[in-house]
Length: 370
Ligand SMILES: NC(=O)c1ccc[n+]([C@@H]2O[C@H](COP(=O)([O-])OP(=O)(O)OC[C@H]3O[C@@H](n4cnc5c(N)ncnc54)[C@H](O)[C@@H]3O)[C@@H](O)[C@H]2O)c1
Image (cartoon, rainbow, N blue to C red; front, side):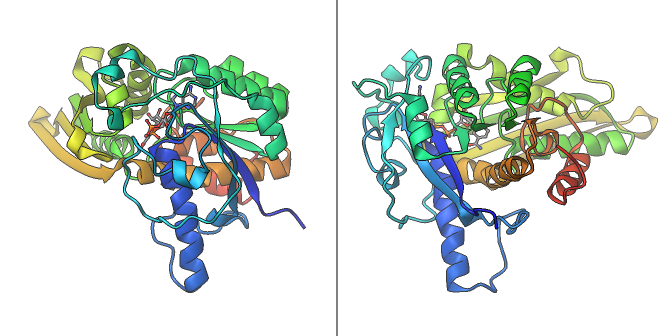
């Protein structure tokens, strides 16, 4: 009989961690109070025997003085976190947030904004991350560091390699999609998922679906943009354009990969566009697509999508974690191609989403290795 608890650690106790961990409590509570209630908002209630509430957070790392040293259930609601509260009464747990390595986690430009909107690094010595990971018994580390934290991400990926832990990389520093890093995980016998989570019903999946629709219906796409605004720290951080390179690559390639004949760079513009504080964790995306149909007659499409950013990413992460665990149960190593293609914007190999979805179902059913 296998152990049903999936022990995870999180790095970055920001909005995405908060939404994921609240969501675990939310679904546990739902099903305890009425087991017959249909799952709302999940792709899989049961994923090869694992339920969302089988995920247990056993370690957490951050650098913010309002979070470090605090019980995790308090830190998840501390400023500057601002995501919608979906489950305020989290179970008691002994987990306190450990001081991580700061490295390139925090952008200097944040200093110009109010304290309750920015990261405030604690004046503490970093913990021994590998020791904390080992002592906690965690088996999967979920990376929610800010965009541009390339060195910090590599530090945590290296810690996974040294401790035998899996890495689920939800942000756009390329590790699991980088062939050299991918090889390291494979050689060490560790399964991993990455990079940069593709939200459940976010700008990327909608834009990809529309681009594919144009292509399938023979409509030539001439040019497109995707502009995004939001008011959380993720958007504030991304005002520093020097941190944005990999995010733009990740978001742009996610759309370009759906076209047989990719657009010239000047005809595609995709990216975080502005920070609007009062939006908090609400993200608004504007998509415009211009193309030509039968007889080369022009057409265009405009779309506005409004979502709560962080639960939207948690809806995918909850499956990425469980897929990672079943890979560990089955002794599979290296990047998990199916769930990475379905749940991440920048996987090692891109597939159209309907293909990736079938691959994930085959993987869960044990009919596909990775
Ligand atoms: N829908 C989504 O929300 C979505 C989708 C795709 C990717 N992502 C990515 O996921 C990541 C997390 O997003 P978020 O909204 O939770 O961000 P956030 O800004 O709310 O949280 C980041 C957290 O990291 C902490 N941090 C900063 N430097 C650190 C360090 N060196 N070590 C440990 N902790 C550190 C901050 O204090 C903060 O608590 C971002 O890179 C984001 O781009 C989010």
